Image 1 (cartoon, rainbow, N blue to C red):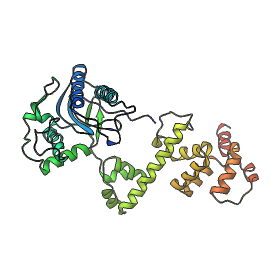
Image 2 (image 1 turned 60 degrees about the vertical axis):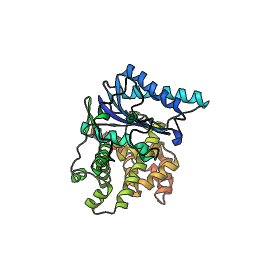
Image 3 (image 1 turned 180 degrees about the vertical axis):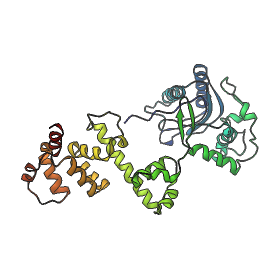
Length: 347
């Protein structure tokens, strides 16, 4: 499955990347300096500035500001160049990074000072040092001079005191707020009222939409008068349905549709019909567990029973999955409902 395209906008980003299996990515002073040199050289090419950083043993934090829609490009350059340096030096092969870098767009610049404190306090949290400014590989040390480093916000931030509860809440809100792309701008997504997610929808659809909109499962459970465990189970089944759909889609069973068709776009009826026709036994068995016998039987009766091309399949479904005591000849006598309907419409 293709990875979801990262949203990009001009402005401030908090970037985090970790070593694969959380292994060390900075072994000595040379590694730290090389990473900073790569940052500086990349900044000249991609026109960005660094406002805070902390280079920990197995991960790094950056607060950078872009002036173009090129975040993915510049980060690929930085991570790729450093990987080459590290692997060559350590005589190793394979990926250095745990996965794609994580990024949070700073949609409200009032969070910047709290974010700088969050980054600069990392060495204290890790018990590497006890005071801001003492850790050699954090920007607050002010030891390294590279043209990409902008100390304006560091100097305007109170780093003498621990993060307050309010600042911690601001950071938590920044990380958890869902954002959307509006033209070239990234803005916070405004939640719909919870009850609106359940209008003219099944309970499962409403729960999924509410969770995707940022509602906590406990809030949804309270609204529906269900237990938190029930909401968790419903959402887990939904994710299993999506995973099964995407597995079969990537195998090509929805050959007459777009290669990027989603579970929601296909709908349950189409999904189950194609699953019956082209998936293997284990996938059909799993679908019965996920959708339940009633829904699986309804789709089968509406879309497959009268299709003479699938007589053997229909016999297997009837006997094995639905427990119907019928013979194969039963399906020879079933009229092709779709053909009869088409004939009636054209007559």
